[in-house]
Image 1 (cartoon, rainbow, N blue to C red):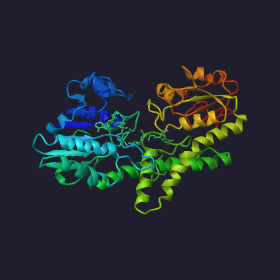
Image 2: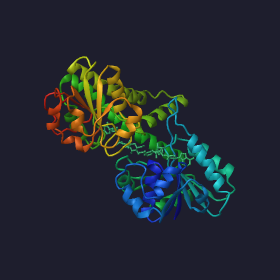
Image 3: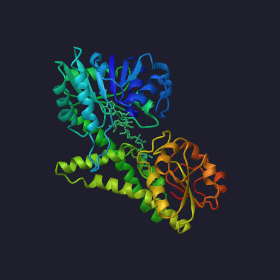
Image 4: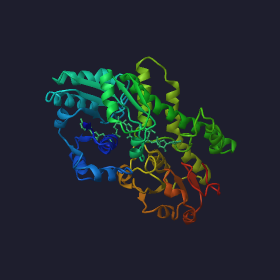
Length: 421
Ligand SMILES: NC(=O)c1ccc[n+]([C@@H]2O[C@H](COP(=O)([O-])OP(=O)(O)OC[C@H]3O[C@@H](n4cnc5c(N)ncnc54)[C@H](O)[C@@H]3O)[C@@H](O)[C@H]2O)c1
Ligand SMILES: O=c1ccn([C@@H]2O[C@H](COP(=O)(O)OP(=O)(O)O[C@H]3O[C@H](CO)[C@@H](O)[C@H](O)[C@H]3O)[C@@H](O)[C@H]2O)c(=O)[nH]1
């Protein structure tokens, strides 16, 4: 099939590359000309395992990118993968979805035959039917346009693997024919397909993220009580997660959840619920617990080493999780801000995310390795679950005092004095 993917970011580029891998011909429409050029040159503008290999294989063959919406007219389907960042009030900013819809509508003045527009961006329930469909119908002259909503569940750092091996494929559609057109694109993947309406598909995405975020905040809240009791929350959650009704996943306590999705999607669901006259007390608490958690780590550090003014603190891990260079909503950001507010000097290290973090905190020290960050430090905070940190042990002897607070439970030398989470 011939597919246009609108937006060549984390989701759009992975979607486009994986559709090419499945045998489709893909045009990515990306307003950022530099990103489009990089894709055409076979270079991924983001760090994502397995993506470079797919680009090497398909760029210039079945996969190409450009800034022009022209390819939409000849395509069987277009997938909308533009950003839906948080607005100031927590609601989802849908301006990019609106702009992309208008441009797709205008592009559909040309060409003929069935074209199915598929929203893959995470959008508040009601957006596809209430915003995308009218915007496209207003601008296009085409008779046969189908509409579907196909949320994406990939995780950054494992995006290609998740895309090609999903737990389920959710397809919300305005009519059966549109749903069939989307299902045909995924033929070749082995996963159950959930068929539903447009608005239910949108809500499945929000509810999934909100539930996963709830599990994390729940573990953090239980963990804070465990700490007071002097017991290990990981041991507790292992026992809890063995109940198949709970599952062991997403119960890791620590610094809380970051990233471009959980914080913004829970906030958008809170905002939607409020706009409908509901009181989303649970979801508000999920965000509250998450906002407080990084500061608790700094508080714990102060309990251990006293006043932080003039102390040197090594921060290991700046990306919001391992295997990505993405620092959006990284828990390291509020932690570093609080350390600086309390007068500490920060030496930071991350295998990939230093260039991005430099733009946020240009004035702190950035080390070339974990060992360099630790040398002479009064304390260390581990903020990202990078596998390379799990083997650290002797490196902690380079510190002035071996006080290590684990914001993620990954150190295999855990249990030694001062290792706290
Ligand atoms: N990042 C994830 O892990 C993830 C996973 C699942 C779902 N999502 C959702 O997918 C959507 C995209 O997220 P992302 O992380 O890929 O965002 P992103 O910012 O990395 O990518 C969006 C891209 O769209 C481009 N763009 C913006 N307006 C455009 C327009 N009018 N025409 C063409 N291109 C345009 C931007 O230049 C950017 O490259 C969001 O709704 C997000 O919530 C993200
Ligand atoms: O037990 C856990 C699991 C994760 N995290 C943190 O939670 C955040 C998010 O992690 P993860 O879910 O692995 O990464 P994302 O790439 O943000 O993926 C989430 O958000 C995407 C965007 O909507 C969805 O597609 C995915 O299904 C969903 O897992 C990170 O800061 C993790 O450190 C924890 O604190 N404890």
